[in-house]
Figure 1 (cartoon, rainbow, N blue to C red):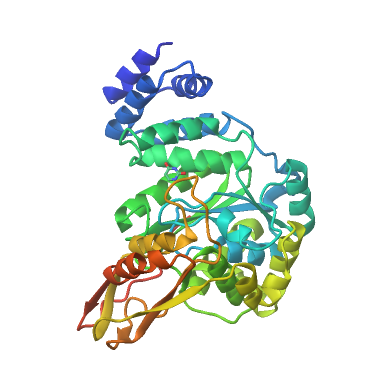
Figure 2: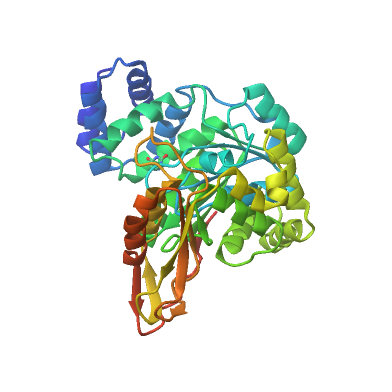
Length: 436
Ligand code: URA
């Protein structure tokens, strides 16, 4: 077999055999196939596409390019969720405890934030003592005992994706449904869960900006997951504005706690209940209405918040911060809390969520390069969202930072991210689609 022939075949729009796809993935991972040939194939895939069987073969080859977690001891209960990433997206911190309180074994490996989107690992590290790197044995034991473990990505999982993603990033080949599907789903397959719920974000703060593109990606990932033997569901959810009111690591933990304590409803609560319901439907094999009632009940009974505390304690986190979230102000003190005031009267008709994420990053909540340090206390809170009517001088939100110099630029970004108008905008649905 020759890599040249594989590239030519795909360039001409022909189907690749499983063996050809496996030859490429194995050879590229080992370093036998050079970057320029891998880049040429990625570009051919971008231009010519792949059918479902080809995408499944690519996904499976990438999944088995490194370590794969064996969760068979949990039978049909092992459950995972994945979000394509957004601003203020702290759903894993809420969905995980709800599902675990209802009997799932939630096993999740999460990433760090980069650019305008935050990462679950960074958020959890805002809790003092929280250990995000634990041995495989401890991870499995915790899933067994507590029903929930969320850790950082470690070990040698999906090395093919690590190499290919870096290559795609610099060769204009990120933007391809077969390549995105295989990248995301290979990591999910390697992480081993039987039930996988996907949250595909759509809108200004999302990776996929339009509903059509988000739906196409959701359908592709669900189909490939099923072809690889997993129980799948995907929601397409709004990211045309940040989710919830907090953006920033400790601030988002506080918001998640408020939702789990039953103190806060609204968009974040609704998306979490919808995602948790999908997970409960998959691992219990029950209908949507019953699953939703159970998810709501887990919050109302306090079982989900108790589960969060049990999980955080198991990973060394200080649960006193969850019981009394004012403690975060001592753990991650913030010198400057600055209100953002409305420059005009009117309705907020649009929010550029990515710009608001960037404002939080500038304040110290995120990284512009992988090496940047994080200020866990920094970020922003949002007091008015799309559809809200505001008066000139009204408080739109607050900036939290220890970097005084960052305030003008962050404030400018925040205000610039908002569009004001005289008429109320059309209501946008939070849950825009379901793919099962
Ligand atoms: N996220 C991933 O993990 N992979 C992609 O290709 C795109 C987004």
